[in-house]
Image (cartoon, rainbow, N blue to C red; front, side):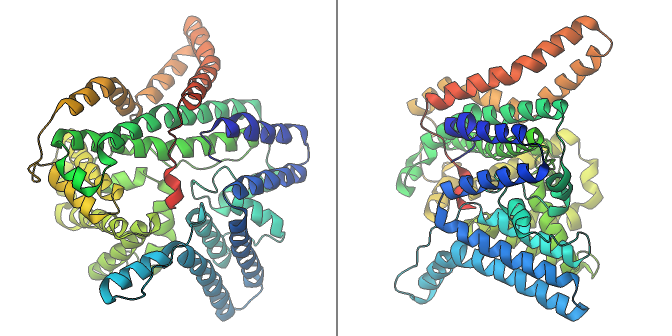
Amino acid sequence: MVFSSLLFVFVFLSFNLLSQIVLKKTEYKNAAMLAFSILFYCWAGPVYFLLLLFDTFVCWGAARLIENADKADRKILLGFSVFAVLLVLGIFKYTGFVCGTLQSIFGFPSEVVSIALPVGISFYSFQLISYVADVYRGQVAAQKKFWVLLLYACLFHQCIAGPIVRYSDVEKDILTRRVNRAEIGRGISRFTVGLAKKAVLANSCAAVADLFFDKTAAELAKTPALGLWLAGFAFMLQIYLDFSAYSDMAIGMGLMCGFHYRENFNYPYTADSVTDFWRRWHISLSTFFRDYVYIPLGGNRKGTARQVFNLFVVWGLTGLWHGASWNYVIWGLYFFVFLIIEKFVLGKKLERIPKAVRIIFVLIIVYFCWIIFKFEDFASLGAVLRGLFGLNRNPFGGKAVALAVKSNYRLLIFSAVACLPLGKKIRTALYEKSQTSAPVGVIYGIWDVAHPAALLILSSMALAGDTYNPFLYFRF
């Protein structure tokens, strides 16, 4: 079950919200939320819920023991719990990757093991690691009730698609949350915006990208260059609209129930440096690696050589987190190279370049990063990278490309605008004007009530009339 489905929106979510309204005590609300979260997770595969139970139990027990242990034992307990969680993650996510790499180099094993990837395992693994680490640091108290920690680990709002939520951020909400009408309204608005971004825009951009990308390596080598450029642009829009849409929906559902999740995307395609891009893109992931990998490794406190090494480790792991394939590792190290150039070569010289030029330069870097991200098969990746510049002796354009542009240019323009903070700025300006102008206040009030309903209807029509609803998070 995914957020962008009619079953989820009109059945699952509706009954979940009804339970949160009907039940008055927070403990009862939490019990209902846990039941719904378990059902939601088990929908993707009930057997793999046992892994989530195991990881949660290990971290719950380790955190309880850490609170009363001496310094040496605390480190052992922390190390054991982190090792156990990463071991489970490694077995189920990276066994096939490791075996495939060994086979290609040494010829063994004779058969590569194929293990189904539990949905969301990367997200809840990192959440539980952050919980134990924060207990070890004394930043949060260990949760005494196992089922409460289980609720935190499998809360369906963000369990399979993020953002990566730290226990300290939602502890108060889990134990003593309160809901008010203003937050419910904001939550509904945020959820419907995310649903429309996914169902109407992201899915449509995905269809455009697949017109030219969903081919074999041999077919990609013959694809017109302009078609590849168009597909790359469509995929660039899709991946942002898709990822940010799920965060929008998670944040919106949280607000409807009294949970306050932090922002996970902040218009990254307006970034004027690669560093700025990663302050805006998948914020919960980048801050996790900063706080639990980069800083513990020494950060920038042990000299330039060590800082470069620490960044190399962080970006290699960032790439590997996204998928068990070498293209993701290359994708992470691709950003490592540009970050090193910014930090140690360009430095303050970057600030002298006009901001518009810097933004365009970052967009070019990001464009090619998504090409690397898209193709796990190196033959296909190479064919596309060469084909973009006509190095496959492929044609520049053709009828298929012209038809794709003619049929989809309005969609792509609108989707590009949706990646910018233009709508947010207009809404803020209207709100400020509505405080001093009665006519504007009436218009703003009507819009504030009507637009969630309009977006819900539009999204429902898109989902009902289209079976193409890709879910990028299955690789995570």
